[in-house]
Amino acid sequence: MLGRFFAVFLAVLLFWCGASLGQTPLAPSLLHAPEIPVTPEIAAFLRARQSVEKFFEQSSNVVCTENVTQAMVGKNGKANYREESVFDYQLQAKTDSGSLKLVETRDTRKAAFRDSARTLLITNNFTSMLLIIHPAYETSYTFEPAGEETLDGVIFLKINFKPVPGASSPAALQLRGQNYPLPLSGTIWVEPQTGAVAKLVASMDSSLSDLGLQAMRSEIHYATVRFHDPDESYWMPVSAIIDVETPRQHWRNIHRFTGYKRFRATIKVEDLEAKP
Image (cartoon, rainbow, N blue to C red; front, side):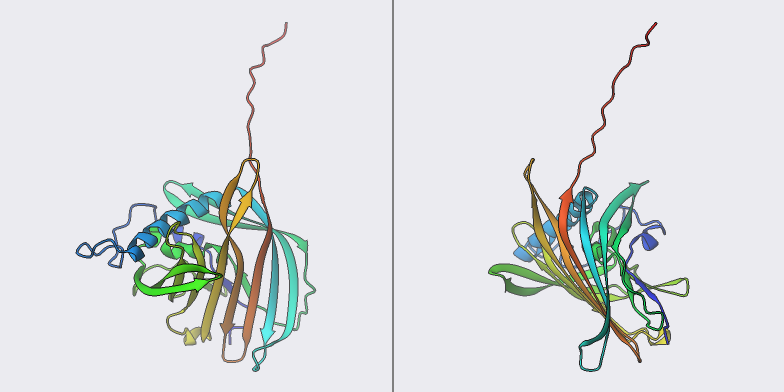
């Protein structure tokens, strides 16, 4: 039995081990098959990889409101207990000595009522699941085209991903102070022209029954957020749904991101002459 545990999807834990940007060899996948011509799927994937790098650059320039629902789910698939919290949220990406480190900050705006008799799931940094297609993790996954699908009238290319056995993962389960990498497989929905990811679904490739973890599934949605003065468009997460199951419990956390605000820091330097 897991007891109270933390499902931490935080790439920092793995990047601290020394993963560096742009210094890893290319993995065999749809992107790196030299005998295959550049298909629309490969072109879209290349754009998505570039968009992900830009996403982490832009994420440090915005703050938003995060609404978190932590729920316990019954056998009928419906929540039989939930707690609600509201935070001021920001994801910062830092590069130190060529390594990418992600820092997620939350300032409590509305704290949830805590029932000490309940065991709830805590989920962090699901917005950074895009690291699956970041260049720093290109040796950790293989990618294959999976057709196309229309969402809200827009055609998206679907790309399946699978973990390379033994490779590092941007997702980990934190239990009793120990971090256990999660093998994830799933599908990414990519807008062909821009490379923007509209949806990312990931689940555990195999259970961690020795830790009491039977299943994990996450579904994250992204959308374009427009700002004015100056006019800019940022591609940001809007929601994340995470389901985790053990032999005795089923948890479902829902994160919603709204009210994006962009900020810019300016530094003014003046030369002050010494007065007599």
